[in-house]
Length: 334
Ligand code: UDP
Image (cartoon, rainbow, N blue to C red):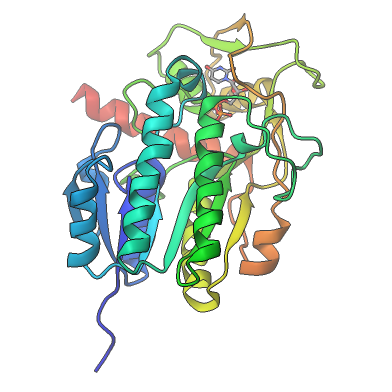
């Protein structure tokens, strides 16, 4: 008899990154159980498995699901992600990103979950002492978003020390963009804050201009530098993490980026090149909470998990996001 299909609990699985991982889980033969409050997610982005609308505040529901589906593995995305908003609304961020994670992790440990993949962020580093930044670099987040993620990482570390059956991997994402090749899923926020999305929507005429947040950073062109990664490479990293946890049963922290940085100006120029539209930009003051440069050293995930990114090309990433944005726009106009 073949093994029964394994259920994987995915919190925030209707969101941008979560929905791509759910797609990959489904394609790999897993049964994703998506738990999402739809605050920023989309029900129709869940391409595989079961969907349950719910909030992580509700520990009772989460526990019921873990028991009902005999969950052994969890991938935890559900979180708020906007750096500037976190500066202005710290309680919102600590509450959802930390306190609700604690609720979930507590229930996991008490109900026999063994493998936990956590979506963390490069924001835990703050202003890195070395670039590209390595996983063992000092954690010194400069905004509540980064701190809320760092505290959850520390919690996972402490809990896994005393619960030998509970193992975790924290994946520290750098800047994710792009969409599913078949354009079924992609970034869809009512109020987007990410650079590539805003630049493309400016190209589509949704905004008159794009603000450049800070032109006085200590970088070659004065604008902030980030490591942009295609969603499909990031999604694949989650599958590798899950497989690794199931086989090796050890705790890990991995960066996930390409190791090459692009400035805001370089991104804007690439957006102009890909879209063939000359978007208007307005130089503005720095955005609160933004570090000047974040670039990943991702050798660890390559060495330990054999992660091999396939879309390491800014033009390709922006083109993928552009196709998606055009599709969204077309749908809206129908
Ligand atoms: N940025 C910008 N204009 C925008 C949005 C973002 O200049 O309209 C800058 C932002 O200050 C940062 C970089 O682009 O330096 C990437 O920001 P994003 O919000 O995409 O990702 P983050 O690095 O904050 O996670």
